[in-house]
Length: 153
Image (cartoon, rainbow, N blue to C red):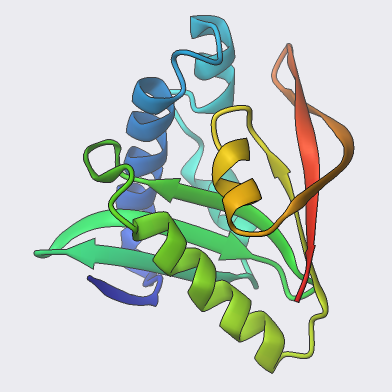
């Protein structure tokens, strides 16, 4: 697996990865309406670019194919982590997460925080995060209650 910083011409591929992943991997935990609100097929690329601008954005490739994406802010908030639907439980998310944790330590960040979906909660618990509350997020007319998770590093 090869991991590196996200390039400007890869936003479309990352959005496709996110949409496919959400609509495939999260179906046991969310309704179709929730999945459509979370990752619409007409994803606004400009809004996405603005949302991750200035973040530490990494992509993972396996045999030339994009298989993962992670984005973290300079204050230690992990705002996105996705693994391609065909590469679940193959170590992609773990590898990306560990790269972000290394970067955070180098930057002097002492705590990582995120809002976890129901689907990803078990992964973050395995990475050493603890639940510290509930967040309410809105995507269109749909309201999501996610677990706020934290980890001291």
